[in-house]
Length: 395
Ligand SMILES: Cc1ncc(COP(=O)(O)O)c(C=O)c1O
Image 1: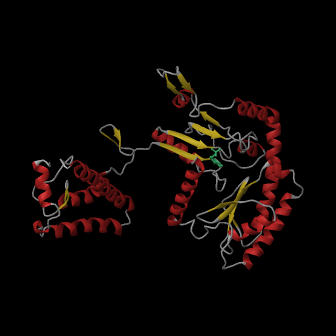
Image 2: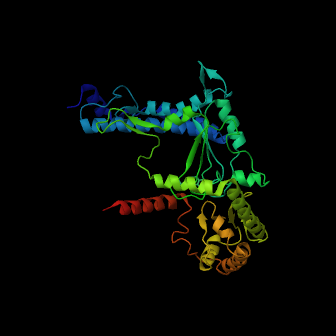
């Protein structure tokens, strides 16, 4: 049985006879506020306005659902005078108020981002993450600038050095221009480096480093009063194989600085040759200024056709999207192969010719080509991949 106030609100819910003409100028006012911001391309302000309005709708909808399922009362109601009651707790006047409130609040944010209001910062940064060798292109983010921002706001900064952490130091020692990416940057508080990549150890091992021991304490996990005994684990993963750790250690000490330097030198010799070769192919464009991870795209041909062709010659690329591109890492085993860079470039030239000859046709590289790479397509692909995971986990 609904409460009296809920019953009053129900009586006028979406009742058109309540309509008042002042709604029209109110609507015009809301539209005017947004039109001004859109005209000035103040997208941050427009987004702030829409975000707060969206939050209000979210709250009003769950409030309405509470009433629907209890048939007793919403958490709050709006049974009073209104020109139109949209939902049990939301009338048209409140709705318009929330539509402009975010814009107003955003406008009142002090222009000076460092100014403290009542002792509190007027902008909040939580943490910064940057890459030292991102996966798609192997490029290093502008970490020096990010470090300065982290210091200025006194927040943590993590560097994902999974891919580059075990090879950039050696490439740098060889004399290549590698910007500082590690604890030399004063703002960096933690970083990762995968031993199972360029540390040449087994899969499943990595390193996370902290600037201070006190930071490492935050990763520990402990349930002292668990009936199974006092449970404590130094990492998120519980049981792990000590064999992996031992094998990783063995790899590190076996190769040592000398071994890693030697590997980096051979890798860079091959990578440099391949990069120059790609630069000399007019149809292809390298992405950024890469080191050992090389990616290229093309405005002239479909790189996925190139991938189709290269597969037939035994080469394996990783396919990138947005924009479509191909990437590969030069690794130590490749450097042992005879004339690897020359053979690769010969095949790549032939791959470009093949792609030219296939212009206008759909590449085989992915059956989803033309679907993946778009926002809508990616949502469908995500669904498909999650369905695949469900299948893998099913018994
Ligand atoms: C830059 C970067 N970060 C993180 C990862 C993730 O590594 P893992 O799958 O070992 O957790 C990768 C994997 O390729 C990577 O390239």
